[in-house]
Amino acid sequence: MSKRKTRERQLAKLAARRQAERRRRQRQRILVGTIIGVVVLALGIGAVFAFTGGGKDKAAPTTAPTSGPSPTPAYSPGTGKENGTITPNPAPEEVACGAEAPPEAGKPKPQFDGPPPLTIDPATTYVAVMKTSCGTIKFELNPVSAPITSNSFVFLADHHYFDGQYFHRLDTSIDVVQGGDPKGDGTTGPGYAIPDELSGSETYPPGTLAMANAGANSGGSQFFIITGDKGHLLDDNNNYTVFGKIIEGLDVAQQIQKMPIQDPEKAAAGDLSGQQPKQAIYIDSVTIVEKKAEPSTGATSGATSGATSGPTSGASPTDGSVVPTTDGSGQGPND
Image (cartoon, rainbow, N blue to C red; front, side, top):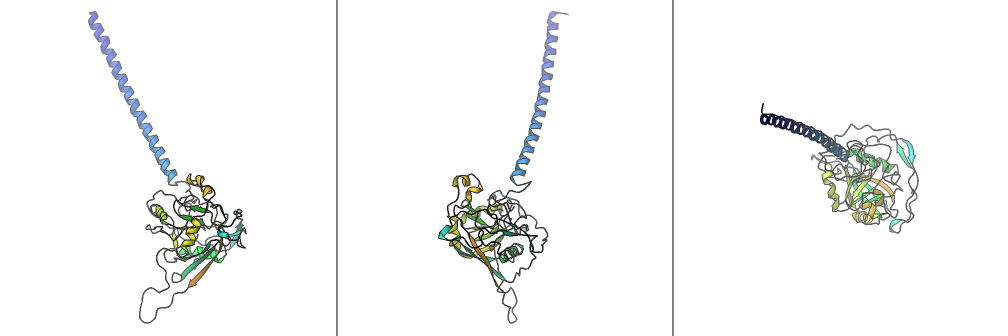
């Protein structure tokens, strides 16, 4: 055999080996790419899970859009009996608007064995009169579209639960004034949770009274008031039960909104502790005024005049709730 033919065979074998090596490396690249793709997909799912609160929902209103209202579980009330207390954190010494601390300031607040029995009357008008350090705000509650939340708020008000508490969050990014936490730091509530009451069409215009939460069906006592148009930033994340509206005193709520906070830089960075007011802004008292529906006369039929309609405001637990944040709500309105 000539040297030339031997050389050609050697070159052919070398070319075959190189081609086989290229095919092997290509298969490795495909395999590695597939593995990376799976890992990236898993990480992406994990990120979405964490962002949307797949584990434990964050406590405050968030701005992430959701697919719609969560199903409302069956209502399981307790007996309305007290089974403990929570002692509030000390409030700032200086009281806003030149006011003084109310008699109930600093006193422990009750915890209850479960949501109260449902005794609200949809045909009755309920007005919550909230006296604060800066003036009085009146809310008309909505026992028609939010009977459980309105019922809980009336129950807590009748037990003087809100008296002496202070507003613990002023969030100007969404025009929110938040209160209803007996400890005063956005982490506690009345000892029970109530289900959401959502239609999926909730909006949050100025004057709205809504329930803070830490996730689905985690409302308690923390509520928030919308004082301006930035409240509509929550419309795409409308997971907060609307149970009342301001009928008098929006200017008072707006004055409270403008009060200085502890640390604007922390607040801008998402640290909710920075949104706490520098001065104590107390809820001196909350009382409920009821107006029974007048019976219809003659042969006319239809809704009675005392029935309320439309969204109304009231008070309620991030969870947790954030955005905007369980009764641990903090990051949005949430408890």
